[in-house]
Structure formats: structure tokens, C-alpha cells
Image (cartoon, rainbow, N blue to C red; front, side, top):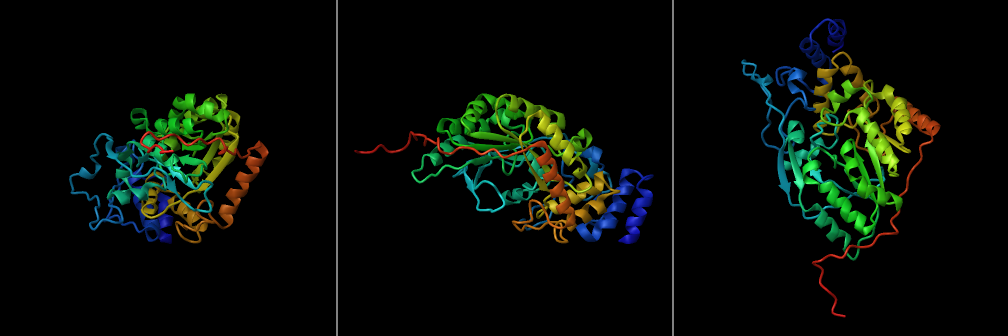
Length: 393
């Protein structure tokens, strides 16, 4: 492995992208289990607009699907990006969790899969539950939860329901492009607004400003806050790692629009990718604070299950010269592994590198004056469900 890494450093500067990527695969093959015979390297230009570079079968499938070059370069023939929409009739809409490292115990995800195509998305492995690939399928096979607003109204009407902040977008982005057409998220906000129920939103889309007419009145009652994820300020890096998400400048403009409307805004520096965007922590916090964000958080890169190979594949293609170094830093923050699911480590990591990142974030946040916004739950009024049986007395 050491000799492969040495050849990578010597040749990557003067080789084309294919040669450099192949050498990088050899250098870190023992870490990410890649084989050049099993998985061909695809020109990233052919994958423009897509985050993942492959579409291997999910972990629950009996058969393993691997792209193979048939000798006619068909592996590089990739059609126009298209999204296939599937209707999902969920039985319930509020998902519960008891994770001690998460600030909420309930959430709603209006969609499964996400058109933004962020290659690092920790939600990708969840697509395997649908019999689909966490790779390209996650970006193109999207499930829309029809009737979500009606389900929420019914669940909030339950006699034993106790109100606490509901996070919308904890798994996939509630304002991904399909929201323009289906308006599932807006319907959920309308129900929450009528019931005076606290809501926290996480997104990297500028589409959230469309709903200021709902969010601003809720904010005046202390019922809502919006977290905008800003991964990088570099538009070229953003296009590579988050191909169909809003540009960094549009996200900063979104923070400004929300703040001007009186809506509390948080900035999430997430994920922090070692040796890729970690140098931008202070700059992102400074720009976001200037735009109006008053709360901040961060998450260290998480690579659960299939995401381990999907991200590594992206890394050796886009950053062949530093791929081995990046993965080495990831392992240093994950107890020698590419992922550690322990509650006390999965969000922030552990070890010297993770400690340094945490202290940098803490110092910058303190200097800028970021604080935490708490939402109210005492104003909640259960909606009256039309199908509920009337009392006889």
C-alpha cells in the first residue's frame, strides 16, 4: 500500500483523472475494499448532476448488481438525469426516537430519497429498505408521502398526544425540488400553524422562503426555527459534493431573508469532511452570522453502511491525490474505523482531530455570539378531527 501511495503522489499531478483515480484506488484498496476489476472508474464529467458514482444493490438484496464495462464503453453512457416519483401511503407520519445525542424525540420526513444528490448523505442507506440502491437510486427514485398533512392532523388530535418540537427534514430535505410541485411540507406547516405546534426545519434549499407567510406568524409566537446547512463556501466544491442543492451564496441569502422576516435561523456546518472543507469552519460561521443566523451546530462526516463505499468512490474520483489522507483522518476520529455508531461519538467523533474541530467550532461560535433558540409548546391546541365521533353527553 505504501508503494502505491508513493506512486500516487508522484504521478497524480501529471496524470489524467483516470490514471490518478486508479492509483488512488490501489493505495486505499485495503481500506475501502475497492477493486479496479470489480468496479470501473467513470469519468466524473459523465456523471454531471449526480452525487453517487454507482448504483450497487442494497444490503438486503439477494443478488449483487455491479456495473461492468462490456468493452464498448457503455459504462460511460449515462442518460439525462430523471426523477421517478412513487406515491407512498404511510400509516403514521410522526417518527419517534430516543437517541440521547439528538435534541428532538420526534420528526417527520415528507419524502424518501432526495434529489439534491449529496454524496455524503447519511440517509442513503435507508433506501435499501425499499429494495433500492443507496447510490443513484437514492437520488432518482423518490417516494412522496401523500396525505401527510391529514395524518399529522389525526395524530395531533389523539387524546394522549403531548406536544414537543417536531423536526421536519431530519432524514431527507423537506424542500427538495419535488416540494415545488407536491407541497407536502407546506401542508404539514399549515396543520402545525393552526394547532400552534412547535416545528424545527432542517434544509439546504432556498425554497423555504416560499413559506415565510406561514413561518413568520409562527415565529412571532415562538413556534418555529429553521436550520440552513452550509457545507462549504466554495461553489466548485459545492457542485461536486451537493450537485443539485442551492449554491452557497443562495443559502446565505436564504438565511438573510428568513432573519429579516423575524424567523430564528441556525447554521449547520455539516458535514465537516476532514481535509476537504474543515478549513472553512470559521469562515462559514462568520458569513452565516453576518447574514442573520444566531444559532450554530456541526456534524462530523458520518459513513454508515453502504455510504462507506459510496463516499470513498466519490473521493478517489474527485480528490485522488488526498483520498488516502482524508480517510485516514476519518478513521482517526472514528476509533480506527470509517464509522462508529456510538451515541457519544457518531455526531462529533473522538480523538485528537475531532477534539481540534470541536474546539475551533466552540471558540468561533463563542466569539460570534451564537446562542440557542428554545421553542414554546404551551400554546398547543389539538386540532379538531372531522372524522372523530361526537360525544353523547
